[in-house]
Amino acid sequence: MNLPVFEHTISSLHAIVNNEKEPLQKVSRLIKYDPGLYFSLLEKVNSLTTRAEITSISQAISLIGAEGIENHILEQDFFLDEDYILLWCYAVLSGEAASIINEKADIAEDEEAFFAGIMSCIGILFMYIKHPKHKKICDLLLRVPVEHKIFIEEKLFKTNLLKQLDKNITSPQIYRELINIMNFIFSDDGQRVELFNHPARFSANYKSYQLFQLLDVSEHAARSILFPAVVEAQEKFREMSKRYFKIPENEVEELLADIVERFEDVCKEFKVGELSEKFITAAEQYHFSGISFLTKSEPLKESLEKIYAANREEKNIFIYGETNVGKRLLAVALHNRPDNPRKTKPFLSIHCGALDSETLELELFGAKGGFLGKEKHKGALELANGGTILLKDIDRIPLTFQDKLSEIFCKDEFYKIGETRLSFFDVRFFITSRKNIFEEAKEARFSERLLRVLKPVSIYIPPLRERREDIEFIGNSIIEKYNLNLTDKALLLGLKEYYETHAFQNNLKDLKRLLFYLAAKHRLES
Image 1 (cartoon, rainbow, N blue to C red):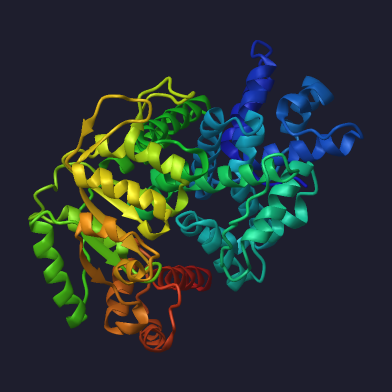
Image 2 (image 1 turned 60 degrees about the vertical axis):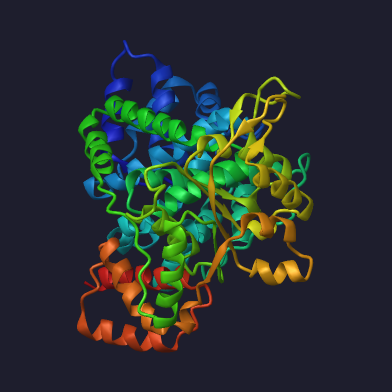
């Protein structure tokens, strides 16, 4: 199947294949930047061979030669106009993110990693073929993670990008296995299953699962670059980079800069340099106006006043409540308050539940380098000295390691891994958990010693269903932040009724998904 291709990529490739002075290697290097062309080429060459499956453009060229590649480019006649240029930018950024991370993690061949990074974009192209009206919501879908894309598409079209990938990508096998893993992880109703038992390192599915992780983290990278207002995309990119590929906090900014640099180079290759300048400049000029945790709930307001006082006094703070109630949002808001004495100092976050003890130790303490094969690495206690560290899901740290932390935090000194000299630190902690760690400590499920050392002032954030006066308030801020254009009075009236009755089991996640779905539905009907 020939998917639609981008006019500006095909125009550039035409010029190259018609110029005898241009090497074929340049064509092979650039084809991957058009997802539709890349997919249709792999489909074509795999239909021509009964030998080993072709997974890269270089393999395709060796099979069908220069003339075959030229003919494939010249026969394209289904073009995407400028309305889809944001999708192209998203695909290039996702693909390059996957490639750069793959260079560090050594998961697959470079082109296989790149293809994994653009898999969702290929699914969107299939959706456009199936339902041309999908064009109206494409740019909206790029702002949300894969599970939200699937949910919105399924509700509106009775199919989704994953179903279309499953239907249309029959080979190579490595990509079929990647789609099978995605089918297991994502349900039609937009729920995501976390795999606690990952495929074994030498199992048949291990490489495919790693490609899924590449897909996952690279899309968050693209969203964090194109849409800087989507703060959770930046947070997820950092978290997943550490969880999946053990990329330390101090390397994340450099990684993002490398992705942007490659994106700018690709835009110049396709003579759309002004395009990269437009998006990157807009991202750089985005003014971070700060984050506030606002509520209309009187009991929660009283609790917040106590926390604000503790924040001014630089005390450690413990925030707990169900998933997606705004624990991290409150932590960031506390850091950014004008009366926080550490506001201008570093603020780092560590997702304790995503890291094993060894990685968590490296992330916190750092390493001297040259010790048991470990590279030199600055830990969070060094990077955040004078500032604040957010320990997310602190209850998921093993008890033995909690006790070790209590000894270190008590003395404000630590050893880097492989180091014999003491290092000192001055850090205050925000800690979060879904459970009340004071109650957990009574049942010996959390370290009493660590609690005594931290002496945190605590605050409980109730779920949305217990503070319904906040739902419309928060919903309106989401509508404004993402420019969802939900202004119809009848719709807003219906939303108010929904706010008063819906369970919101996943709290803010359910609220955001609802509003994005309604915004997409409104676009289709307008």
